[in-house]
Image (cartoon, rainbow, N blue to C red):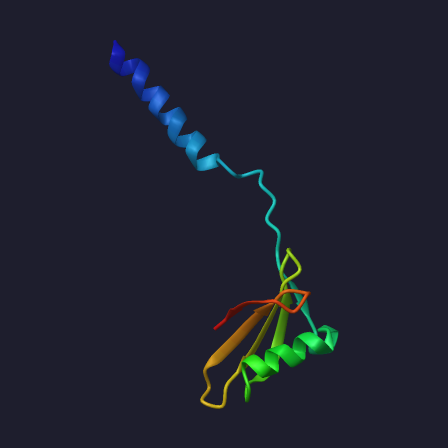
Length: 91
């Protein structure tokens, strides 16, 4: 008799786990033009990654700018800069 009770309960737990987070809203990054990046932030990006031809910019939900480009050797490089000029990450 216990078997008949635990099987539906187990199924209910699996379905609940699969649906967890289904109603959650996902914040996405906004694509920007290079011209829309504040000049002081572009200056910082160029100082951090000299010789990189920047071509793509995203603004993250928290306000950080992710500035991406290609180095002369073909490697994709990026720098994440907060609006106040603080560098979060250089890849």
